[in-house]
Amino acid sequence: MEDLCNHDSFWRQKVDATRKMGLLPEQKMTGALRMLAYDAAANQCDEITRMGTSTALKCLKKFCRQIELLYGGWFLRSPNPADLYRLLNRGHRRGFPGMIGSIDCIHWEWKNCPTGWAGAYSGRKGRPTIILEAMASHDTHVWHAFFGTPGAQNDLNVLGASNVFERVIGGIAPLVEFDVNNKRYTNGYYLADGIYPRWSTFVKTISNPRTEEEKHFCKKQEAYRKDVERCFCILQSRWAILRHGARLFKLEDLRAIMISCIILHNMIVQDEFVEEEFVEPIENDLMNPSMATVYDRPVHPDTGEPIQFEPVGRDGQNLPRFMDREFQVESLVMHNWNIDGNRV
Image (tube, rainbow, N blue to C red; front, side, top):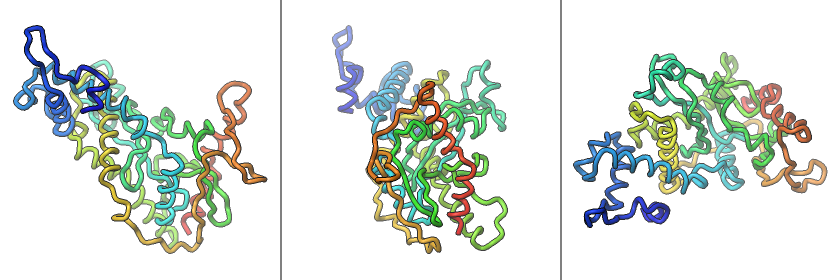
């Protein structure tokens, strides 16, 4: 409340034209939070906050946009080297060296979708929806959120439009190196379900496991990729507005609501999650993989010293390096090596 009041005078209590004191900051923020947490309609907040419908909606929209503006830079950041080291350590204990988290999509029903857009936003269930792509870690912290794709698309279309690998291809993401079965890998990966492509940055399950090693790998992969599903369930249970159909008409308002709910969720996770409470036994891995190494900058292959980032773009000068890094992310050969290396 203090941050919002210092950022925008709208939240402060002011004197109106009739010399009467206006609404308190607590009233305005309580109305916005009740609509987010309990999916209360704007006119339902009148009994508690004593303000009109239009004022309640204005408070909700301003609250969501300013939460993203003030806290989105930190609570929706990409993993820094310290975060990556912690995530890779947990992946190593689980028997998946180089794993950062799991990725998946969820649909949010748009109850008041404009009639002209209903065809583009209606998916297989026949109702207009909007897709959220998210990457979550073991503590259900959301490290990547891409929202706004029409519900008629599938996960592959969302992946093609999202910026999940933008920092990796651009050469500004921390470098992750790990060894599995005497093979060196330079990209971390996400656990994904069957619809995602066979890229080096995705590790999927085996469709028809036959040996005991393959069955063991499938069991662990399918269990750990549910971290993002748990995150979606917690989001919907914590913020009821995401569990029911969206009643607003503008897509930018719905995006602000979704992103602000994710930011508040990450705040709660950071405040309440205790790493020691969820320590898992180290998997008995026949490969004996070494712990993944995280570099803030790329490392020279001969000297091992960090080097400066090379600019990568889509212009004529830097296009070859851009294409090389994109090919490395989308490599089918490296994906097959990941599967072969991690399933032992």
